[in-house]
Amino acid sequence: MLSASKSADVIVIGGGCEGTSIAWQLALRKAGKVILLEKRGIASGATGFSSAIIRTHYGHEALSSMALHGLRIFERFNEIVGGESGFRRTGFLVLFPAADAKAASGAAAMHRRIGINSVFLGADEFHHIEPRTTRDDIGAVVWEAESGHADPSLTTTSFANAARNAGVETRTGVEVHRLVAPRGRIEGVETNDGTYSAGTVVVAANYRTKDLLKTLGIDLPLNPMRHTIAIVERTVDFGPLPPIVADRILGAYYRPDGDTRTLIGNVNFERGTVDEDVETAKPGDRQEIESLVERFAQRWRGQDSATLARSYSGVYDCSPDLQPVLGPVGGVDGLFVAAGFSGHGFKLSPAVGEMLSSAVVGERSKIADVRLFDLHRFARGRTIKDQFTYAPAPLPTPSPTARRSG
Ligand SMILES: Cc1cc2nc3c(=O)[nH]c(=O)nc-3n(C[C@H](O)[C@H](O)[C@H](O)COP(=O)(O)OP(=O)(O)OC[C@H]3O[C@@H](n4cnc5c(N)ncnc54)[C@H](O)[C@@H]3O)c2cc1C
Image (cartoon, rainbow, N blue to C red; front, top):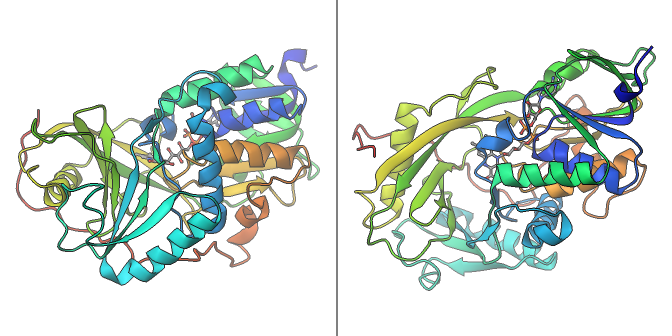
């Protein structure tokens, strides 16, 4: 017989930003007894490596609405969730080539319509925001004054604490091996700690969601793409803190890291290498580090002598349309999924918690329609298409110049 402590109304698998946010919001919605199972530690997966940029610029209204919901939570995180998120408002600037100016202007208008403080500017009009970038190749910019970044581990620990305070049991060191759904209805999960029973299971296990769904014969097409991050120490004469910049011309983003460093990553989600070994922390790819640092130096005047401070890599769980997979899994009653965030799920995590927990208790979320993100869309040949599309960010080859590391 199962011990009482292994029986719940809802089991959430995964202690990243998505699983902890969902568990907390399930408790707020009185979904019954909730147990969160995490095989390692809270924020030990992709979340711990996240650049945690919180911007609302998307080409699809539903995603912008979700990001805006997240931004509003991060702004008052301590009051709403409790604890800290490390949110820092820096502003967020997107640089576009001239060919994307029309689409960028359309996107910014859509953003303003749904309440985002988004401003479209011509190439000559953003000097007052950030005068230190090179600008010959910039066709247009979009400026979000309210965006910023957070600390992903702090945020997720706060979500987990808020969940615990609201009655959720979180169990680390418990690895789920198999989902149990013998008659088309979920009954629980098999773990290294025995069988846990529950009438509802939410799988938020990032790339491993694919393996877990496979135990029921369900195909979730996810690709694990390892991405390199480089962090440079800017030169001492750089001046005041820059905003976050997404450079769609050189294909890189630059995010302040503390007061004197800049974190650099790739804008292009597909860039990276397929690596199923998602649990292992690995250094960044050497060529890629060079390329990122080169692009930083190319975009920011006087930063040729910025020094590499450190680098690392993290894995994106990329879906075929690079958009999340959310909601009930058709064909298995009581089974829900939140995965496939494709390298942009951190900022969405407050909205994902709200949307998934609402779906579990049979309510409809006001943020966006969860059905847009249905898992079966791929099998049905439907993908989520942006309403405003840009030319793909380029994949520049690194120059042979080696850089000093410090
Ligand atoms: C380098 C990098 C930069 C990024 N930058 C940004 C950014 O700037 N802005 C943004 O919005 N997003 C960003 N992202 C994406 C964002 O971080 C992820 O989408 C998000 O963290 C995914 O959270 P998650 O909870 O789904 O996954 P995870 O954090 O991976 O959590 C899943 C958890 O499930 C656990 N697990 C797996 N299998 C099992 C099992 N069988 N049993 C029990 N537990 C299991 C894992 O141990 C893990 O802790 C970035 C990602 C990376 C890698």
